[in-house]
Image (cartoon, rainbow, N blue to C red; front, side, top):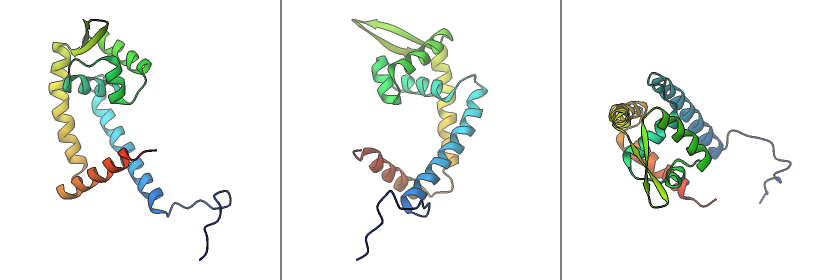
Length: 150
């Protein structure tokens, strides 16, 4: 049985299924992110700012640490996002002991109530090429990859 050459001497090949899957997933994600960024621009929001609003709107009372973990960003990064959204009057921080909990202001809630349904409908349209069953299968496969220890 012939062994594969050692990694240092193996030539690059994009024909491998894992590589092709990753490239296609990355291209699709880039395409969708670019298009959604254009939608958000009309509301003077970045995708990261929208993610903060969507996350806090979906689960009020998070701490900054909780938010950072949910968004997979550093606390410093979330701090900068929160500062901008606070200055715009979209979020508020309420003291709870030593912690501050995050909530949407009425203006933030109105933006959440406007944009989240638009985003959900828009995403459904992005996946129309797949049947509902294929969408479920894709979601299941991606979840398995996400949960695989690295």
